[in-house]
Image (cartoon, rainbow, N blue to C red):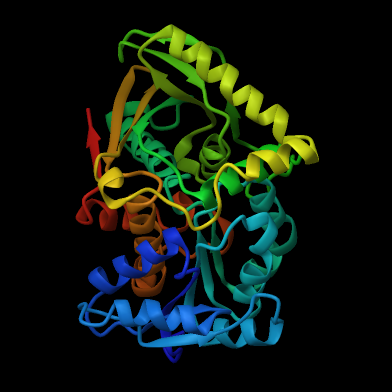
Length: 387
């Protein structure tokens, strides 16, 4: 890939999160890195490029390409080491971009949290990506980097403390403060409407001699955290378990549970009712349309709102007598930190290739990049604390 024109090409720079990612790349990519922004609306892309003039590493080019034009998309992919896509809802708009990346031999990252989209990429593109030695890595934002890399660090710590080769149990507890954009709302409603479309029942990265399974969800009090734990129906546990199936370090029998961390029981009950109601309404076309009108794509929180936002993901793990607690902390989870995460993931695939394992196909962040990406994120200000 050394002869390609661009290290990274960013699709979606005219959207809310994509614009934040463009600014992050312009401010933090190594000076001299050639990267591009791409999409169908050249005038809007030109405006983004002008807004980045004077930054340490502005985009080198604007590439006009409509996702529905397979030929144009293939040209972009062939010019790029990595395609980074922030264009959602992904189940609606994402497949042409990832298909072009695989066909053009470019690695690919996105920030989806939509199980149906990830399932489709595995079913349709995993074999092609393996053959072409391409890495397709979805969920490179708050869904699911803190959880996937946090669980991986927990496993590494348990192994170092004598738990290697033993059954492992890890549970993730999430708390955060933040708001959400119209694009995130639309993606969430789309994901809720397709909950029946589960991930493939037999993951292609599974090993017949090892087991990785979810812990049965239940609401309970967690003494170590002084909080209630409420099962969290996101894509994150699926991603963690995919990593566990693919990596021998997770041991012969790995189990994972995923929860929201809540202080008061009434809040737990109210949240459960609210989420359940939204999921139910998302199943029917007319009520789903009403939900989608709550926020429009492109709307997002202000800089001041994002500045007040934060997240904390705590992983509590055990393997035999070995114990470990990992806490991943950062700022605004849905936007500032997600833009940072996808940007650092793209730069990792583009610039750190000689340090990455020789694994290809539709992968998780832990499988594709693991400690190399974690090192980047720590330098970028996301904390991974070990206790």
